[in-house]
Length: 196
View 1 (cartoon, rainbow, N blue to C red):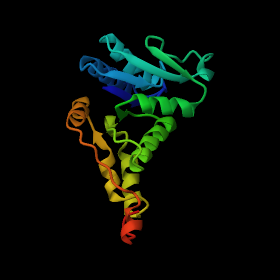
View 2: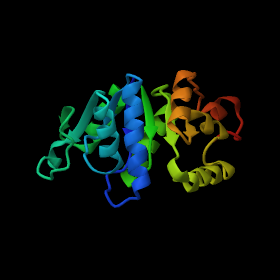
View 3: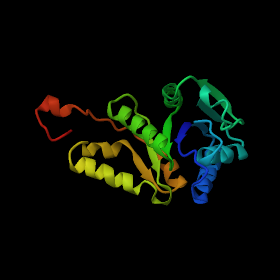
């Protein structure tokens, strides 16, 4: 599989996140998966790529040309250059068979919510897995519970992604994955306002 990993590029984070990234990259390579990522050499992003390459795995990095002068690119992979961040995300989404969301900042949040929104709208059926290292995403998951409770999002949206605490859980989810889709606007067809 081509597995897209969305994650942090920060070097200031706790080393446990870097270690989790390197271990996950090694596990990807050992299982014969190809990494699709943002081509950064720092943070969790660089850690996943280093772990993968250490075990001889293949990686495809997608990065806008405005990063060329910033010395942030991971060189030991196939590189696809884009003009914009929007084009970068589109290529990463198209090239990937699954998405794993590791800890990250606002860019990672945006990437997660974009692929989740696209799945909610029926634009893809690919697995989306949150790798909840150190409980990093607990607060975001609580926020989503509130969004559902207040009926800004249907409870069925919980079925569009999975939350895993270990790499082993992630690969088990991928092995057992069955696409789940629902019609976001079914309440318009049956006259019920319960599903939003």
